[in-house]
Amino acid sequence: MKLREIQEILSAEVLTEGADLDKQIKYAFAADLLSDVLALARGTGVQTLLITGIVHPQVIHASNIFDLGAIIFVRGKRPVEATLQSAIENQIPLLVTPYIMYEACGRLYQHGIKPSIAKVKNG
Amino acid sequence: MAEAEENIRFHGLFHIEGGDFTNAGAISSRVKKILKEAGLPGKIILRTSIAAFEAEMNVISYANQGNLSLFITPRFLKVVVKDEGIGIPDVDLAMSEGYSTANEKIRELGFGAGMGLSNIKKNTDEMILTSESGRGTHLEFIIYLDEQTKE
Image (cartoon, rainbow over all chains, first blue to last red; front, side, top):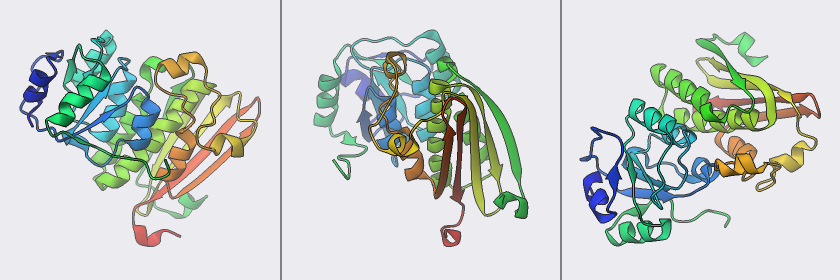
């Protein structure tokens, strides 16, 4: 679905002006640990949304590594200015939703957004 | 050194400042850009960038300072990360998944899950890690460009 539909489903605010809201998103990965993002979020790249509560600039660098499509911050968390600037430079749309992570994931799952990875090999 | 026999297409050296969490990931982003400009396959770029990101995070989290060298040859990519810092007292233990000595600051930023070194190993074809406790750490990894040349 389009990023703008995700924005509606999650009553989200777009933080990066001029972001491409027509971008197609098919997958999502949710984590508050960038270590987990680095270890697991792979393979789906530009069509993947990262759902996170991490608002530090490192989240943009980590997303950049995977060419992720967009980032949505949960629990109404707002990024620091450096994060916002880095996102604009790297053309990664940033959104913020008032929903908690569980609710945000549930709503998107109901609307057909698939996990970028469903389970780990040695879990 | 393997690269001495190889034709080095590119060599870059980047400084990493210990404790500079704000810029964490900046060097690996540059590495990724260089690999992209070199026209390398996406999968190779991804594996190298992930490993470089983890290595960069380790220097920022645990060392006073360090540097990352990137070598591109026609056959493989090699990354060497050297740092001056506390080092790793037990390399084998540090390599095991989930083992971490990260402090609160590192964890707050979403790192320190003890997955970094094993994630580097997972994404590379060869990895050498040596450390002298109290002095620093030396990490090298290689990613072959052609699966056929993998030994």
